[in-house]
Image 1 (cartoon, rainbow over the protein chains, first blue to last red):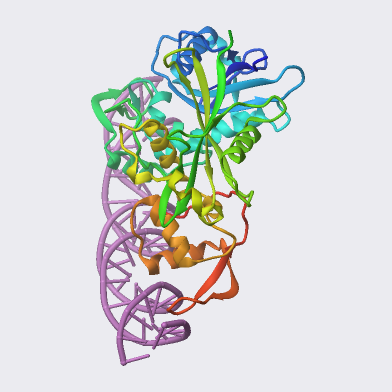
Image 2: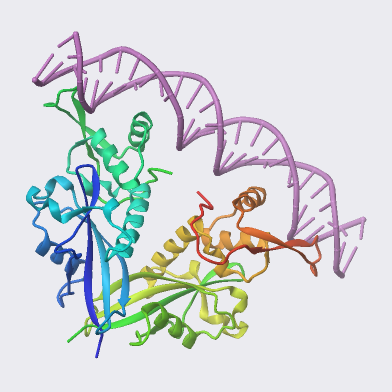
Length: 202
Length: 202
DNA sequence: CCAAAAGTGTTGCGTATACACCCATGG
DNA sequence: CCATGGGTGTATACGCAACACTTTTGG
């Protein structure tokens, strides 16, 4: 009897300036590999079953494969983590998104999520994949808040702008974000939305 | 029909100051998960089938799981990489250990090995797991050569010693390594041989 | 005494950090 | 005119890289 192989997803997004993970009925999304698809594509189609989104620009990466020698039959799960922009999510489903800071050690899947957060932190410090948590256009303050939510600490505005702009990853769209009771902010976008290695923070 | 799940190993060691990978009959070691064992332990027992070693202090980490939609039946392989000290290896089997610099793009498993080398580089830069490539006791020059073999570049002796000693990972054994026609070197060992995060190199 | 590897300090440079005020807009 | 968030510059500290000579040993 071959062990049952499943796919499990840790889906991250930034909503209301918090790093959140998607749960469905208190569980992470789970599914099975499909014969005619690669593992990565199977993960994507499981994602689509759980979360309706208009945008298909999410970042998908394997975390690891775990043999959960749990209760009944031996099971093996390939765990993925996925990044998607918060603004592309239906507001009605917001209660499914749990703030990572509120996931206690006694919650199921605590270990998996902690590890995923750790990997995510590393990823945003050493690559440009934050783009996958933002829509095409954004202000520097929005970008800074994304970093702060992931890293779990505040950043100095001036140093942040200096650093980010010096990396040359962004381009100004020329637009200004009006409509707020404040000075309008310059709107930026990423020059490239493909993963690259870049040292962003120490 | 559930897909067949296999385990594949990329075993690294430093022999003659070169980073090398173990091959058996031009293939990487392969095996299958065992029902009564975790994946990690299955990987370890496959390792023992291929390589007889007196020491069981190797570093084992999952690389990733790949669905090789290759020729016949769909197969899924969990790939591990393993680090073991060069001096614990039988000299007779040296021809099974291929210098990583000599693995061409057309060789089978080139992609897997490249990725494993990349992960290994990261790992030695940001953790203390080099210990797994060395025996308990070693000189600073030996340690430096291990780093040089993995990183693929030469390091300045003075800067290396300053950096490594400042990290506080090592302790002097008080011994001197005599027997060479040169000034005797201080013998060091790691304070801890458990994985920790430490920024070693930039 | 010679060859071989061990051991040892200083300086310059670039990057990271800390820090406070003025600006443009909508209400 | 006031509240809100956008935008800007400088001084200091720290870590990294470059670099050459003396010491100890075995043969």
